[in-house]
Length: 529
Image: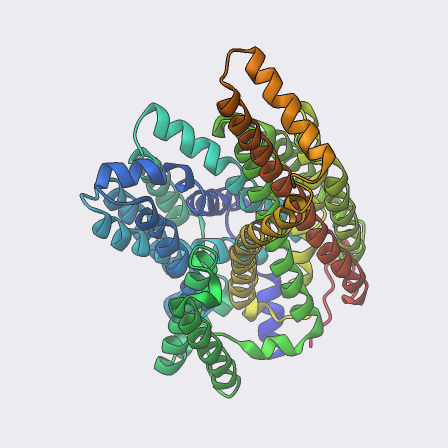
């Protein structure tokens, strides 16, 4: 890119107030991210309404995530081919129309088809919103803009299940799709009115784009297989399933082939050569890990409260809501801090806080935890997240030319989304496997030749007998209750193990943070590679 062209792009500013544009594109991103989690609690209602089984209804989530994951990494290429504003508006149109179709779907098959379309439309909204913010604001103000985007990316998955449960319980599962329609229409008109493409986007479009059929085919097969195996792996017992094993092979072969193929393309659909930059590669690794930790804790806490402590989905959502409120207040502060403190130091602080919080969770979580303690624990878990999302996003752009902003946004958001899928799959597998392990260890002590065990059974049997239960039935009930308690304790220990794994992961990222390149807070200077 020539110096003259770079200078022209750097001084380009939008006609309208940047914060007005930021609110508009953040609204679109919030709507899309919300749809990744809002349907979770409505699956049983969908299955009952459409005459499907609960296992079949989970494809409502998988179909959306697969098409979403395929579009994310190539959104930068699509924006260059169509023009970013036109692509963004097209995504909004597809997402809104498919939301309407999902709401009126007469069968599960049609709902899955419309969810694929909805995921494809939504796939371009997150990265394009981020890319628009990167171009709309000068480098020294990007932290503030990314803070607004961070609120949408982190808050939406948090409130999604609670909002989805409330809508489904009070109205119908179809309304979780219908609510997208007015928001989508309003956002489409606002984008059409206020958003514009910077000069370099017009140049990319004018240069023309060669259609890379092989790259698109490898991407579709590789990412599609990866997303399905992550979503269905634990359910189908991983390598115990021929279907999952086949998906692993297809995904591995296609993704490795994709990287090799794209590396030698002059106009790649995914610019994998950007990963030659250690800073860019590290930022993406951190965003991937952030996705794992964000969604892992988002899955672990409500699952623990509901399955082991008997909380309703609404009460579990309330326990998580305080953490969301803390993030809402923390994000703007992080945006301000990025103008005064180097991003790598904020990132290191975030990973350290997150590692400590996950380790603290291993000491605090148990079957006697109160609602207040669970709420405070969730607040502890999310404080570090606020230090991470904005600075990591900021660091990803250091040393990357402005004409790569669309590609950066697509890859960074893709890494976070895949991280969220890996995190969800990781914790569900860990909990299941570690619960089995701990149950096997605890059962070793539940033997008739163990006097403590026998005394517990006798004491419980006598209490039940005094309450009017027959002697034999009282003894059987005592054994059943002890086994039930043993299973709960084993599951509780599995959660402790899982939080420890997350603590170690965050600790490793803490040390990597110091290897990131230095930025100049508030100066806007970026060293070009």
